[in-house]
Length: 331
Image: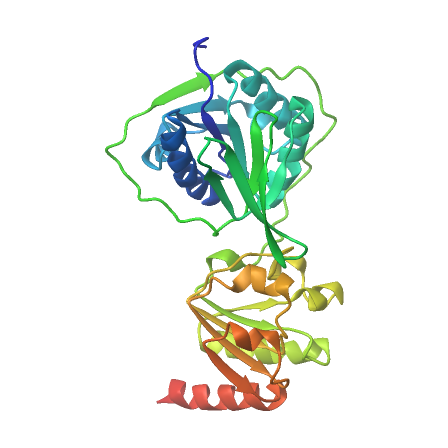
């Protein structure tokens, strides 16, 4: 390892089942902006098994100058303790000025462990990372369920953050970029005690990638009525999401939740039925291109950000929409 290598902006490049999570590319784009301001390099680090060079080169095409690759059979499945040891060991060798993770389930599990081991702070669920006029890295995140935006500067190194998916611009892929791929030998010094007995896919839909979302909230009286949302979504090629109260009631799994503590979405069309528009919910969907809101309460906060608003009972509006759209489909 080059002993002079230090101060770069490092991105943990989440890799599972042969796929790099797209939040990685968003983080690389933002890191490229930060590194150019600070006049340092961008480093990617990828941990897995049978990681191919063409997959690694994608990190370079999206902004990395160097990519550290840890490839070993014991790294095929995510083990938070072993992955943590690898990242901590690397950080101590290269001394990054910042270390960023996607705010995915994996990132949220791994980042705190790394922060504790490095004796540094961690700012979770950031929506932006900036560099101030003095060259300090500033982390931006909603606070108090989205009622205010906090600008956080930490004095410890490395500056560590988890960043929400789809809140930052996806950079352009530049195949003319060149960088260095560094194959590392992982030191797996201990048995974490974890065993992967099998894999079960729980995510039936990726809301963050959906172009059309049909969402429901407290206006629904019972779980069975959500079938109306499913019928409407299928007619317009959308997927169903919900606000937090319906998840708390057990009506929908948490993967369907939209909001500050759920998914951040940016669809072309977002239809909100029976959602009042709490700051918690709006924090997760206000980036939608077109927002259509249906609520029986004309003073509902959701109408303040809606492009189109309908004051009405969802139990009347949704069936009429389904009826009219079905007619169009039959033509």
